[in-house]
Structure formats: C-alpha cells, structure tokens
Image 1 (cartoon, rainbow, N blue to C red):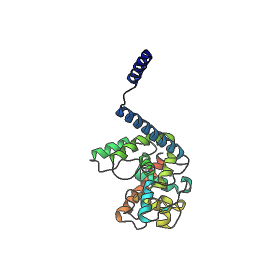
Image 2 (cartoon, rainbow, N blue to C red; image 1 turned 60 degrees about the vertical axis):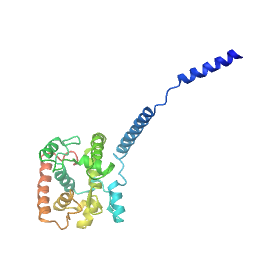
Image 3 (cartoon, one colour; image 1 turned 30 degrees about the vertical axis):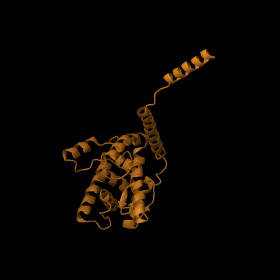
Image 4 (spheres, rainbow, N blue to C red; image 1 turned 90 degrees about the vertical axis):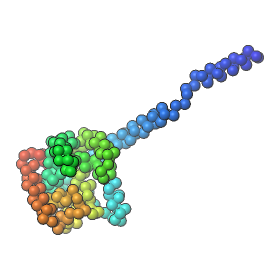
Length: 245
C-alpha cells in the first residue's frame, strides 16, 4: 500500500510537470488571429454577395437618416440611367476608371506633388468607402479601404462598380444616388437626364451638401461644361468602353 501511494504521488507530480504553463499572451494572439480571419472572410463574403445583390443601406445613409429623419434614395440599374450620367461621373471623378486596377498611380503622384490638397481616390475606392466603411479622414479607414479595393476590383466588373457608385453616392443633403438626384433637382428620372443635367450632378459630387445642381453657381456651371467635354472625350478615345454596352 505504501509503495502504491508513493507511486500515485509521483504520477501526480509527473502529470503536473507535463501540463503546459498558462500563457495569456499566446492565447490572446491566437484569438486575435481567429478574429482577423473571421473579419476577412466576412468581408470577402459581402464583396461576393454585393457583386450581384444590391447593398441594402450604407453607414452614411444610416447616419443621415438618423440626423434628418428620412432620406431620398431609389436604386436603378445602370441601363436605366442616361448614358451621359455614367460618362459624366467617370469624367468628373476618375477619367482613367477603365484603365486602372483600383488605384490611379498617376493621380496619386500628382496629388502628392500638389501637397495632398487634391484628392486621388478612384471610383473603386469611393465605392469601397461608401458601401463597407465610413466617411471622414481616418488612417484606419484608409488602410481598410486600400486592402479591400483590390478584392472588389477582382470580384466585380467595372460596370458593376460604377452602377453601385451611382446608386450609393451622396448627391445632396439626405439624397443618395442619381435617380433621387434627378427627381429632386430636375423632376425627371435618371433615364431622362440631359447631358448638361448629368454633368451638373457629377460636378456636385465632391461637395453635394453645398452644391445645388438645379441652381448652379458660376463655378458649378463652368465645371459642368468641362465635365461635358470630358465625357465626350472619354467616349471618343475608348476610356468608357468598360462600362458602356
């Protein structure tokens, strides 16, 4: 019996010696990696889903709805918009939309040489920001946007990217998408927009809360004329080919 008791004690000591020590930092790192992988998989799933299903709402829309009580928005497919609207938006915001893979290196270089006062975000980047993230200048959001944009470019067609952009972009105070903008400012559907009206909506995109396409300032009218010329140029030189039928 004494020998058995001694053996039992030695076995217990050996079992305790074999137990791994508790390392909270290693455990935390393991769960952090799992959390990051889960977020990445969720993001990829959403990108894939939104390649054929329309995003129901965005964080910006939710914020404006909470602020104003109601927002104006109505989703329409790209083929139900005046062709001038798509060309005008690309000419105004991202003339090389059909040529890049999500980032316009030349525009980024120009922005850096100009001291960073000029934006260099492509339509693809703006779609990622509008659909998946939040507004404002934030380095975390910029990093997430940069990581997500290539996946959107890989899984969505250029036509789909532009269609989503034209439906979720803020086009006025509590107004989202070009259909709502067309009806609010000009009393017509997006399909009936004239070249000038489309250019005016596109000209207001960088600052939609302060610019009124229906009552354009001299600057906005001048900018719209330049956009109309730019839209004709990208159609003529083939830079609209990736989203036109």
